[in-house]
Image (tube, rainbow, N blue to C red; front, side, top):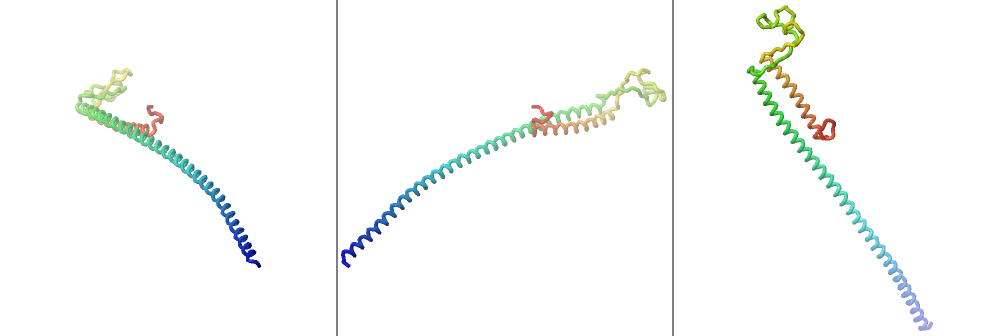
Amino acid sequence: MSPYVITGLGAGILGIALGAAGMHYTIDAAQLAGAHEALASEKAAHARDNEQAAVNLKAVSDTAAQASAAAIAKQTSMQQANDSAQATIAKLQGEKNAADQKYRSALAAGTERVRVAVRSCQADSPAGGGTVPGNPQPASGGDDSAAHADLDPAVAERVFGVTADDQREIDKLVKLQAWACTVKADAPGCAK
């Protein structure tokens, strides 16, 4: 074979190889450009998603902060109302106790009396000024109108002590009602 043919064949094969490599590089460049565009598009979408997630997270955080602030304000308000109710109750309790003690002292000293209406009574002795023992006539002289009698100071003080015990139970119920109104202001019986 002629050296020109071999050189021609070598040059042809080299040309084909260079053409194929160039075509392959051109295809890869186009694909690479498409991949870069897809990657840029994906990065932009990811950035938008991150931005939206941040906005959503901020909205949730703001809502939680508002709810927390409202709960703290309500708790503070309830505590102030409870403190006010406790102070009022303590003040009234002190005033009532002072008045009760003053009245009990007056009962014990005899400067205050407890009068009760009686329909019928009998004195212990004829000197008592009521009816004679064994006589069923009312103390008022025979008619059915009510008469009055003074209780002995010691008995009156004991009776007043029983009413004070009852008042303590009533005060407990008042405190319970005040507590219930502090916790649930729209409950029945609570002032608006």
